[in-house]
Image 1 (tube, one colour):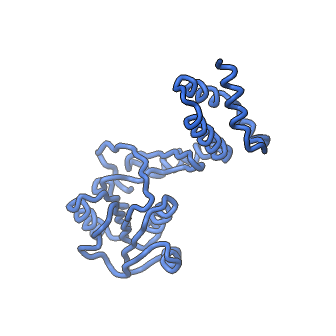
Image 2 (tube, one colour):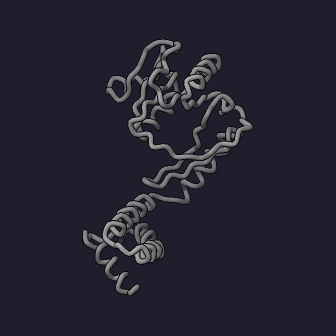
Image 3 (cartoon, one colour):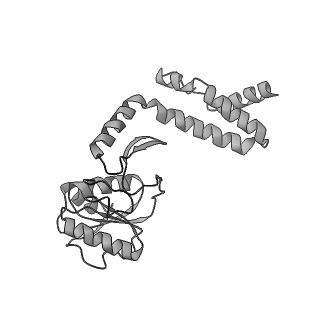
Length: 222
């Protein structure tokens, strides 16, 4: 974003899988948008008269569909989310007007004022997602903060959160007492598993360790 919006944005994480997302533009910015959408499992359709080599490759591989021409009215038909990412402010504004008229969420790469949402700078560690936004004031500052966060939360967090998720689901399925479940959830957060993961000594090779740990903790609770 090059300009600051006075709007107050509401942070949200969207389930993008199978959503039809239309990207107008075929250059570097459009490529970056498409990459993130594909990682989230979205169905991507791109409209542009020219494509970057990477976008061409995605089209050839069948990962995205395309309409190889300049933007025209009607190109947003069937869209659930739209990204205006051309190098023309005039075209981007036209896309924004059309999307708003159709009630479709739109992100305009060149103008936060014309957008109904903005993309935050994001760090991912598996299930861990940390996003930072300056509401269009300075994308570079947001990127710098994300870089600092990235250095703080290493790759061990991906394994750690996978373990917590699996253990939480197992507890929810197998422990009927809500009070016991809450105590187990608290106890698993007090374990030093993250430190052990960073040292390469966790998780155990025993596939049944979660059940064993849960039984041991319940015995203590009782």
